[in-house]
Structure formats: structure tokens, C-alpha cells
Length: 401
Image (cartoon, rainbow, N blue to C red; front, side):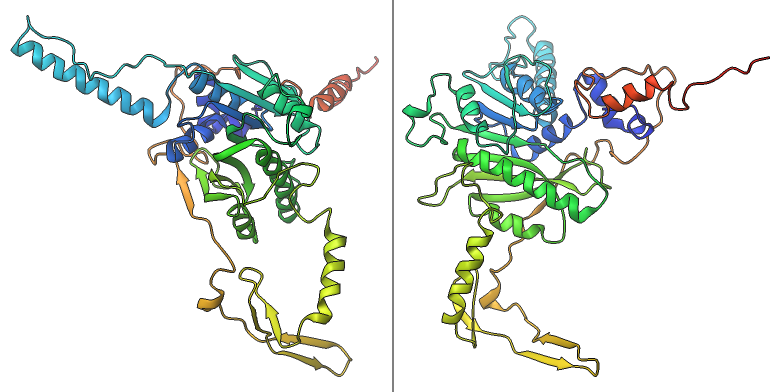
């Protein structure tokens, strides 16, 4: 939450300061909860890449303090208003015998019992009530025992059948992490996908069957492949774009519901998902299988069936350059399951603020400072160097007379 001119025009930036949120990203999680009801029946949560702690702050206020926000708070206010109006009419009819309605909503906060929330990030996180914070790397295998010990203090690797599995699994895993963007979209999307796989690998180690997983993604050209991979472990996979997320940004959030691991699957960060560390072995296996494959057959990667190989023609021009042309492949009923597209959902009420719009501030508006400034921003060293050099324009010198 810096103080650039773009942030000053952002309605959600100012609204976050007024409501006491650490960052404007808190509204993204609240709007996702409005659409998917993420917090229903949830008491054990892991927040990955949590700094500066806005999502953990939402978890603390909703699960630990029992506060209500968004649509649920609006429904409670509407129900309370209706009950008050009915009560006024009843008092006019029978003022001496009126009793409060037993169905009148109780708007007092109701904290949940046995709530356990663990936040992990490489950057330090300022303390939050009821939140256990860990400063660790989610891509390192040693992070899983630290997380399991934070979830269950009695956890020891010797007492667990699998050192990388939780004895008391969690209900929800969140990840709002993103790399420092370079402006090269293909590179940014690739780095973000690797960060997502790291969060997914850790989530598979601690999620209970039926759990939920929410993570930030960068939408790109081949993002549907990622959806299909997540569909292996979760029954429902959605892509959501909260209204508080700028439309000019390629970010979105993947919402995975009802965790159902395949039979016999055992998660471990020592053998993570993906083919990066097994690519040489897979290439050798494929080369060993190539002589056994007939030239006229092609294996479907989804169904495993052997289909006809498309016609290939080689055309050489006068310069000796050979062009390889493939027969056009059309997706028929037999190949319709090769690609799978996740449904896209826009979260947030249309009457809410537009994150890309500028709003006129009232005349008596008072600017507020962020409730939680960055604890260790990556630009801190740059500011110190610039200050030592005399500011943005360098040290000034006085002319001698």
C-alpha cells in the first residue's frame, strides 16, 4: 500500500485505510467469500504468501472475532430492520403485550471454536490476534514439518506414517502470492505458475478431503492446461475475478472446491508435482517407447486410446528449406475432452466501487495513513541510499561568493 498517485485515486485503497485493513487485497478475499462461501464450516486455515497480512486479518476478524462483512452483514442489517419495523407496528396495535420476536436476528459477533490459522511468508508479518506466523519458504521441503508443528504442537515426524502428511488436516488453504512482475507477460505467467505449483504442493500435504484451495493466477494463453491439472484433485474448479481487482490486471483467482485426491496419491514436497525435476527421465522413457509405436497411430493423452496419426507432408523450396505441414485437426466428439475450460465468474456486487475508476472526494475529506505500513519493503534499501545522497535530485551545493 504505497502512496503513488494511482493508489490515491483507488477507491478500495482509501476504503481499506478507513476500515482498518492492512491492504486493499482484503476486499478480494471478502468478495470471493460472498460468491463461493469459502468460510462456511472452516476452522483451520493456512495462508501462504501472507505479507503484509490483509488476508490473515480477514480470517482473524471473521473466524476468531466472529465479525460479518459483505453480503452476510447486509442481510443481517436488512433482517434486523424488518424486525424493527414489524415490532413498531406490533407496538401500535398492542403496546402493553408486545414481546420481542424470537426470530429477531442477533447481530453480535459469534467467534468460532477451535480456530487455528497459520500464515507463512518470506517477509516478516506484524502480529495479528490468534494468528501463528512463520517466516519460511513455501518451496522448501523443510517448511512442511514447521507448518505441521504449528498446526499441531504434538506433531513429531516419528509418530506420523508419512512425514509430509498432517495428522489434523486443514479446511482451507489460501495463496495471494505473486512474483515481482517484469513486464514480460510470458515470463511473469511462467514464474507465477511455478509459485502456484509450490502452493499447491504444500496444500496437498495439509488439506483434508473436501477442503478448499484458493490461489492467485495470471491468465495467459495456455492457462486452461492449469485448470485441467487442478481438476484432477478437486471436484469443482472456478476462475474468479473480484471487482476490487483492477480490470487492467491479468490477475485472477483460482477457486478449487471439494478436494478429492486420486486413489493411492501421497503428497510430498520431496517429490513435488510437475515434470521439471523428472524431465530427463521422462524423455528417456519416451525415447524407449518410440520404436514400439506404430507410425499410423497416435495415442490420445486423455483417454489413452490409439487414434489415426494426422497426415504429414514435407515441402522443400529452392533454397533447401523444408516446411512440415500437418493436416488440420478438428475437435470432434471423440476428442472433445482433450481440453477443459474452467468457468469464469466475476465476483462482487455491481454497485460496488470500480477499481479502475476515479471518484471525486468530498470537500471535508481527511487523508489517512495506512493502518499497517510495509514491515520490510523491498524498496527500503533504495530509499535509504537515495536519502543518503540527498534525495531524488542529489545533494545541493551552494555557490561561493
